[in-house]
Image (cartoon, rainbow, N blue to C red; front, side):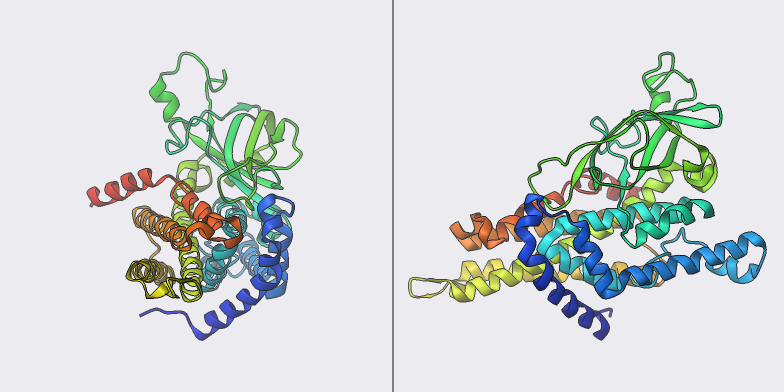
Length: 428
């Protein structure tokens, strides 16, 4: 049976020390937006050597791909250059990243969201779908967090119906493309240096609202993926939204007004094949994102459990610790059951990844559905256990409850997870 290794536990303790020193004292400033999350993430990367590890891993991967492209060491390159199956900058470090993610999520989940989107969606999409030149151009800066990435698929009228309802479009203009449209709820959007943007190809040349094409034709148009950089003409990044939770994760909108894109910005530099299949690219990212939700949920559950155990021992009522009351014990017991279940799901996903058998989209959706509901239930029970104090920001369970609720919407609403799970079952 898989469990945390001694190395994992040593890293966990070191991360906890970093959190106590660098994050807890700055939580109010992070929550208010006074401090953006990125300097703290970079400090974490530097202190634990994550930036150096990522830089070295990417350089080795790029060297293998260069050798393969030049015909040198063909056998070795063929064995090691494919990064589309989950390899890359943090290959073999799945348990390390799970430990870091869960520990951070229990204290400042918005920080984890900012980090996870930049690396888990931004860097991974380029790594698995980009050409060698595109990887050389964008990956080194993103994997070290020197540059912040965002991943833009959601639109005002296309949340769960991400592809069918997509209105952002590109049209060909000679060798270039012209991009128009809008994306919303984009994590890191206000400050991103690099943006992965999904758009439909309008082959009619009259724009996303062109007449003549049927509604079904518009829904099924080819989806292409582009990489944009901050400051491009016609690109506008909004100010951060005010949100219920995840306050330390800047979220905003992206607006595209006749943004000219060269073919070098089309991921894969082709409208065909792996690089040009935007739908398949997004689906593979959905799987990773939903697995990540379970890891964040584990962090929320563990922190709520810790805070509630301490409070149940310290708080007295009618002359005794509230932990002696059965209703309080029931809440603590349910928190422990949720922790065990979600942790086992995370362990299972790590085992599968190491065995080269990554989770299917339906399995990742099942993890996301269960873990997000479990984390939200635990966090709300934590607020209730703390009573009036739980409703006060000072005691932090209030923040955990707001952040946990986002997991039921984040990475696709839980209602759409039900659909993906059922489709996976019925397709067998």
